[in-house]
Image 1 (cartoon, rainbow, N blue to C red):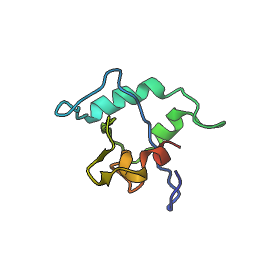
Image 2 (image 1 turned 90 degrees about the vertical axis):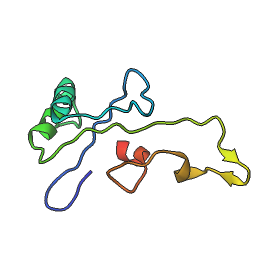
Image 3 (image 1 turned 135 degrees about the vertical axis):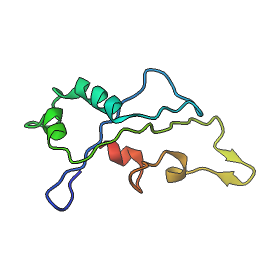
Image 4 (image 1 turned 90 degrees about the horizontal axis):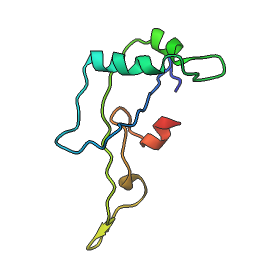
Length: 102
């Protein structure tokens, strides 16, 4: 994702091997994030760029768990969840995470 000031913002979205349910949503340290990202440093992100290139030029970074919920029922009484109300929103943006992954 491009921005002003000649910077790029990027997201590495990793799926846990097991579902995490509240109140057991993990919190991550700087060391946790560094350890996790090293697994992907040699992955190609574009034709000319590897994950290592992005990581080596980072200004800031953090790691956060994004909650996922699948409801069996999407309505109750006269209330129905539709479109943006029915999927997660990125904690770092005001847009949906489907956009953040692209």
